[in-house]
Length: 158
Image (cartoon, rainbow, N blue to C red):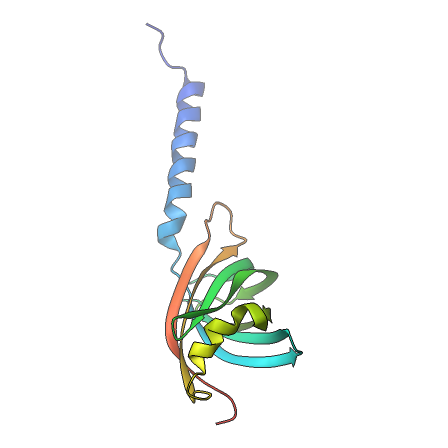
């Protein structure tokens, strides 16, 4: 029987430490809290509307979160409003807050049934929202960090 050499033992030890480090980053990073702060109509025509969604994000971690991109889905009164992926980078400070905005183009003709149930009895004063998604961060060996929240947003003009 062949005895393991010091080189083989060192390689195995490094591999085990590396794998343990990769698995451990998920439990070391807490999910940030994200809230929808405003929805503004930027431009509109007969078939398309562009909205700007503004969000606040709070980082509970003792280190900054360098965000590279995010995936998201926004629901208003349980109806899908917008979703997708947004590129762009910003850093949420350690135990701090930041803001980000997403421009969303909607095809009103294909979304008409969703919006008709939302405004069937006239424009609402407030709307319940739910958001969920994940941040891709520029931290080695880190998987996307999920987030989700619910709340109420006031409709402008009231």
